[in-house]
Amino acid sequence: MSGHSKWASIKHKKGALDAKRGKIFNRHARLIEVAARSGGADVEINVRLRAEVQAAKGANMPNDKIDKAIAKGAGLIKGVSYEEAVYEAYGPEGVALMIDTLTDSKNRTVGEIRNILTKHNGHLGESGSVAWNFTQKGVITIPSEGNDEDNILEIVLEAGAEDLTTEGDSFEITTDPKDFAAVRDALNAASITVSHSEVTRIPGSTVQLELGAARKILKLIDLLDDQDDVQNVSANIDISDEVMETLKNEG
Image (tube, rainbow, N blue to C red; front, top):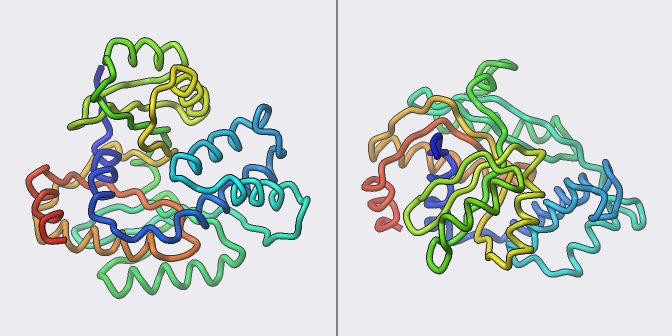
């Protein structure tokens, strides 16, 4: 099959560079709260909530934290009300960025994002300035070792997947966001381990980055990722395996 997601692949490789992911549970909790608030606390009925819970469990988030986040979203216990906001921006080398946030104060969040961008030769863009180049997709990664590609392909296509590609030692499955939970459910039902899954933004065209530019862009993305309200950063970048390996060796 064709049309593999270069940015999704880079994000997964980049994960090996990120030793710090201390805020990951907080991010999953916010997503679960929003999903429960918008569609109810029943994971069997609320498809978005089921997908968020599965993603949280995939990140080894404890069940009690997941249950607490659902309860907050459903209004069963007191919690902060978060709203979603998406910001479009440009980084060094003209790289386009889509920044997804969940926040209880848009003014605070946009100010912090603008400050990070300004300090690293970037700036916010107008609405629609870069969004046209990105499409939301569900991306699911499973280890290729011990899994038969034809078998995986049959399972995910039947569940509604759009694409399956091989990325190093993994299979990468792409779905429409509305089919994301169904494909994950099908893999779980077949007892196939999912190593990573998310709904993210995939660029239609990309910018090829050499080592120096890649350092700058990935540093900027890391700083944005570290901002408490930021849930996801997508970029239209293409970084070769050789450059990624160099960055990994640099630590």
